Image 1 (tube, rainbow, N blue to C red):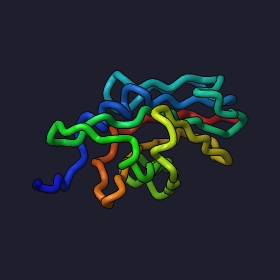
Image 2 (tube, one colour):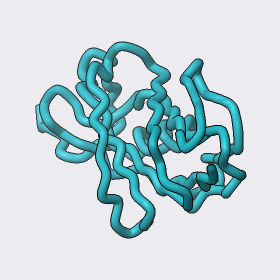
Image 3 (cartoon, rainbow, N blue to C red):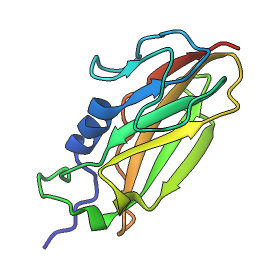
Length: 143
């Protein structure tokens, strides 16, 4: 069987459909990607804790690879969240391990400075294959 070297565009769509940023102290900023992701000003997603200068990123696990082949949850390894205040240069990175644990994931990023923050997500499988980044979503943080 031929190994697929790229992750599915359905993976990216799954991220976009579930990508929400929330946090106290920030106003709604819209998204800089497609219209399927959104940013809100207060609250939490998926039971995540939200506070001042915090953004909670939430997403759904991908269902297929780029070739349309289904991907079992057990083959998901980790998610890589990249973020920063320049949407062309996301300099910060967080790796969320144990990706196969649940279909709906969320992660809180705290300690953000005032301003607009931009975020993308990628998924890596147990063979080391990594998806293209999701569209960028943004969050305005105000103390």
